[in-house]
Image 1 (cartoon, one colour):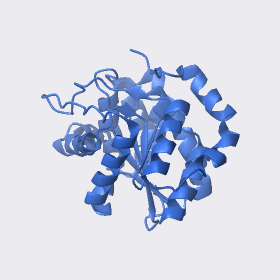
Image 2 (image 1 turned 180 degrees about the vertical axis):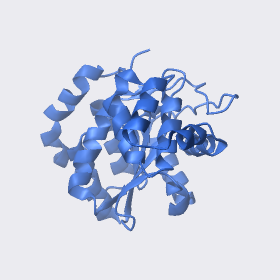
Image 3 (image 1 turned 45 degrees about the horizontal axis):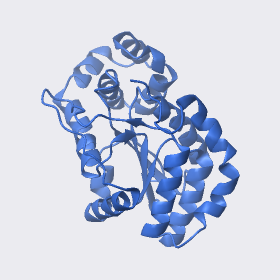
Image 4 (image 1 turned 90 degrees about the horizontal axis):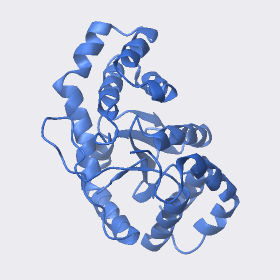
Length: 262
């Protein structure tokens, strides 16, 4: 199964989004940025951005499969659910021990649910870099693992390897190297990146096979399931659901609306 969006082919999704970029300020300015405005945002990102969708039996990092929840019947209902879940959880729980970039004290938290073997997630990494270059003081960016293991067999091993690199202070360098070498994901690459970053290989191998590594990924999967997510990448900006590999300008416009609503 490919990473193609059911609406926009992967090879065309980026160009399509860029072609429509000049209209985002107008679209995002329509209506009050509450549930209705958020629902509008979702419908636009669905049409603009690509994503990979998990089968409903995608498995967790354990022997027993953990179903990926089917999302609500429509985007408006999904937004309401996401808002309820986010409101029920503290910031500390939402962020947890996940890797972060940006301002730890920012009032806006941007979660990205990501899969290392997802082509759209790779595309979105560049968009996030561009977005944070402009707004790193305005946002706390948080990476959550959402490996769609039934369609991406290397997504979980890559997530565990990146977690292990993080135990030696090299998460983001390892994360970037995985996406830069996405076509070559596999054991050889995981070890090569570890060597290139001068990681202690014994510790690296022990950490990525540890129960702590599996639990870290499982916590992210549990949050994704509670939010009833089923595709990658998926962003949540405070409580606003933004599915797909939306460009940096789109995230910037969303940030303006989220800040205005605070």
